[in-house]
Length: 196
Image 1 (tube, rainbow, N blue to C red):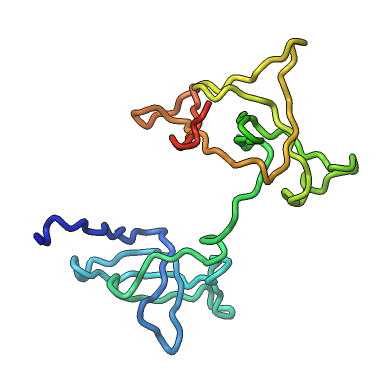
Image 2 (cartoon, rainbow, N blue to C red):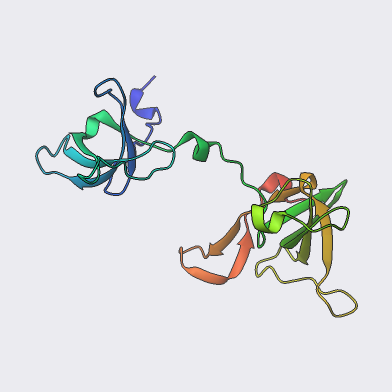
C-alpha cells in the first residue's frame, strides 16, 4: 500500500492565545498555560512563553506578590489543551435555542421562549439554567431558510410545549456559502433526520 495515499492527520499549529499543556512533566507535573509569545530562536521548534493557568478554570496562577507564574518551553513539548469539564460538558436548553421536537412520526421546529413548570409553579430554570423537569415553551418556526414563525388561524404565532427528552438542539447557520453574515438563517439538519 502506498503510504502517500494514507490520510495524514493535520496537526493544529499552536498560536498566541492558545491553551496548552506540557507533554513532558516539569518538576513532577505537567503544567497548563496560555501562550503569550513565540520566540524566534528556532523556526522548526520555537520556544513558547506561557503564563501558567489553572487546569480547570483557565485563569492565571499567581506567584505571591510577584504577579503571574510563567514558564518557557519548546513547542514540541506542548499540546493544545481543553479542560475535561469543557470537553464533556452537555449542552442544556437555553432561551433562544432552536429545537427539533419529535413525538411519534410528527416533527416540528421551534425557538424556546420560556420554561414552564409541569405543575404550574414558578420555574427555577430561568435563573439557574434548565433543570431537566420543566416543559420547553416554543414558538413554532418553519424549517425553511429564514426560519419564519408559523402563524395560527388567530393571527398569533403558534406555540407548543414539549418535554426536554423529546427535543434536540439544532444548530442555526447564520452565514451564507461565502462565509458572510446573512439574515436568511438556516437549520443545520442532518440528512437522515430531515423527514418532513
